[in-house]
Length: 292
Ligand SMILES: C[S@@+](CC[C@H](N)C(=O)[O-])C[C@H]1O[C@@H](n2cnc3c(N)ncnc32)[C@H](O)[C@@H]1O
Image (tube, rainbow, N blue to C red; front, side, top):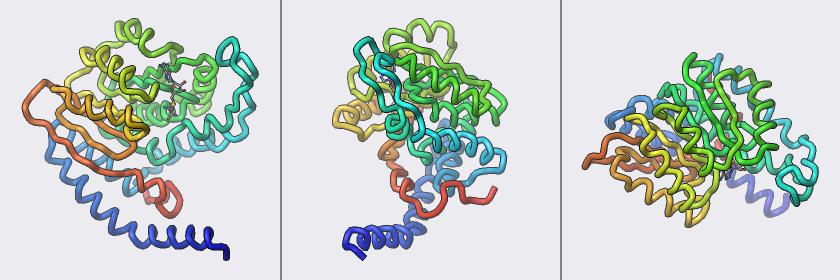
């Protein structure tokens, strides 16, 4: 056996041995969330179900339909030149789809958050090919309430996302084309107060900060904002730090790749905790193995 493949096998074995201990430690941390308000119980349930990969049979069927779409991404044909702008070259959609969509464990987190928090008005900024929108919409279908609006800058991606949502049987999602900063003021007028946001568009501090300023007055009390890729760059780390310090953020959870904020009335007390979940990406075994 070559040295790199032996190293890989030993790494996998070490992870397998460490996993139950790591899992117990994280579940203990998650249990402490139950004491925080608002949403402590719901957040703890969502996160622990992700760690345990606990998926009910009805949930599993929905997820399987979405994962079948992901499995076909490598077969996507390239987009012809000009699809992403007048001078854009041919675009390798297959690799883009695979790389830009969140790995299943993070999509499961979004799904479980929507299942347990039961938000009614949802906004996603950054649709890509629609996988995360599919997961969040699937949770809305199972909740039997709520609607999600997802906004993408490139019409070509938005069209594919629409097809994906349709073929996964989602009826509670709407895809809009628009560059976030320009489109938001118009979109927000028609939306009412927002209960839940998934922020996954431009991965930079200043543009996200400006988006947050547009969004803050439109958040319902107890609104949850999930921020993707908080460790993607120093710039994104800066954004995460800044947004955690907003006076109306009463809970912030740093899960290493993804951050979660709960907004409420400005007050002196805020909870900040670290619950790293990134290591779950390397969980041994199949992703949806738990019993219903
Ligand atoms: C990381 S991908 C989103 C992935 C998707 N949420 C998922 O997990 O399936 C980011 C998407 O946001 C879009 N985007 C980036 N900046 C944007 C902006 N300023 N306005 C609109 N869309 C933007 C990109 O075109 C890309 O499709």
